Image: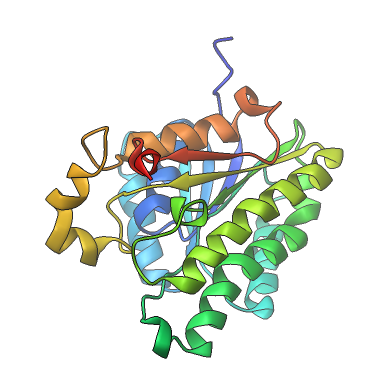
Length: 256
């Protein structure tokens, strides 16, 4: 029982790991002994975060990789680079994503396609291309898709493609969960509520106290909250959980 949440010696990949929720998860893995690859489009930002995390008293290691996951070519290049360094991947966290806020009347095709491509399409094809590495994990691999509470409930803001994309991630996780468990790969998801990140920076800059007042827990999400949930889903502790989405929002959406 003492080793249920152990990820030491495992190899993890966290997309969008240079900031926000991705960086929080990467830190949790690294501090608990996992070799963790983080990627983003800007290598400089990614390397800075890797250097920052490696300077902590971590028993694991963080490695920065540049990647553009918005295209199939970018996904294939990223996976090829990982394959040159690793024979297997134990944990894949699909965190890279974007949001677009615009009024319904003027919501553009670009706003729709960009968000759906990055938030949904890239997750599917990254998992598909990563399958040889995931199948090679000695004790079974874990996939963690980062969804959002906006994919489960109607959002307050006009983020049409974002909320639709996160709903798709939640259902896709169920479908992939059923399929991939045949290969001893568990696919699950996390639906975070309000956390401090680049995505929520604008909202929290002007309305932080107002947002907190709507959260029954009485605070925003903290790094330990998302890291602890990811450690659960990335470890032996979650071996019997398949295709589920864990809501992590301090009861924020329970009021709706």
